[in-house]
Length: 302
Image: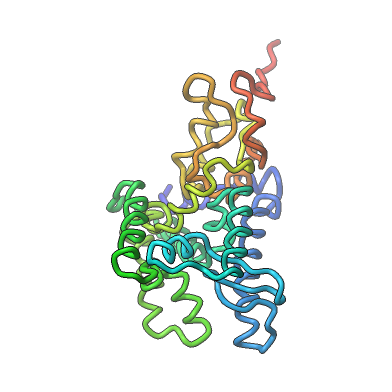
């Protein structure tokens, strides 16, 4: 059978055992979140309904709630610009939120470019594209450091000159123009050059938020890991598959079922596609190291 057909079976067991809706629950909620947030920003300039003013870098909701992107604020500080009082309040609110729920939820639940890279990944699977160039996942941290150093040397918020998220926002409001080239470049990178290359290896925003949420309490956990049937579907759909194995397989002395790796985006796709319902959302503190809550069922003997 063809590789394309094999790829199409990813998550099929989950659909059969849980139904289509439950097998796509967290994916649907993520898309509602991403498009809902984007829609709130677009309602003002496109429809004159100003619920939210601004963009993902800085916004003001209903004239009451300020939110400041911590990564942009940090670059501004390196560039020698201190945010005003309202900006600092927005920074504190955003930081508290991402420290609590995990910084990389920004990548999977907020960032509109994630929809672009997911679409590239979906098409890559359907076309059966195998093999690609690859670079270290630590590259994004080097790029993060360079954007901060560059901001300090240039006196400008450097990443915003090329940030695909900002370009996508501006393009949807004022017309894409040259912004299309950046968005299409990200799409083509993930489709033909590197699987999950942008979000997983290059984007400094994801690198920054992984550091912010390193100790966040909300985590994906595999409390029923002994029920795993090694179908590998969770590894196929995970944007950061390297984070799964230690918790799922208990690799290493005293490793519990909670995924503690800061690169995890808390996207919930592993929960969706697991027919054995091994995964769930939980707290990092509920992380027993020596026991599983479910043992594998042994076949009956006559």
